[in-house]
Image (tube, rainbow, N blue to C red; front, top):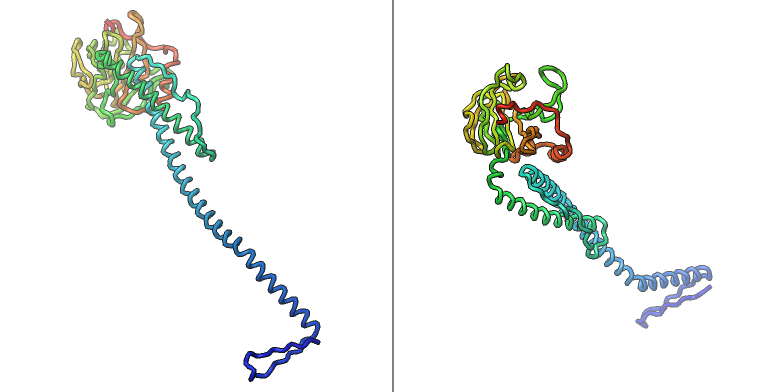
Length: 339
């Protein structure tokens, strides 16, 4: 048994006595020791707790900054994607214009440069974006150089530039492509045949324009006894460009507003859309033919390549096919047209 005495500071008060058993004393000492340990641990760990709070706050700030940086990176990647699409479209248009004008251009350097240093970037997505941006910069510079070269070629060959058929023969927005260039099933014979032009469906009376400067070499309808195939074209106008280097054909016209031998300029009205000849509905059959040599027969090419003021679907495949395709089997121009 243990005795505990409490002596008040005021001597007038009586002393208090408490008796504690040995077991209770042991529990009391143990509790005091535990309380002391807890207090000591609190004193020792409180700096770590404060540091943990600070680290947690910094971590939340870093997570927020990381989220913002990811948003910025995603936005820049989206902008890079749009820029790449525009570069692809610009490269396609440059190739198309070079092909139309017959300008030989070297395209070395387009995407052929080594990747730039990553400027200490470690995040893979940022590294990829940095490399894409550098390649886009390289391609844009190369395309600008090619565009300048093409402009110089056009300025030095202005007569050629005006003569090459390069616009839509009917106003943009007034037609629908109903039959493309190439092999097809004939709507009249149900057999496969080669369609040497494109059919542009439009209302009767829509103006038909010369697509380049040239001379009208035929205006009217071919006699049935001379050429059945060309008689089927109904009212037709044929224009020679650059002294027979190019020929454009406008068929199934309702009206013809030019005569043979007349000089026409690009954009000048030569007739109107009609439904004459072998035709199932009102439309314009339009062809572009190119003579490779002085005596060779003009060969039909896909007219869509030579229409620069309208964006066609699948234009890249069309350009690739035009470079690699062998000459098709086609009906030659009548002799009275080529002379």
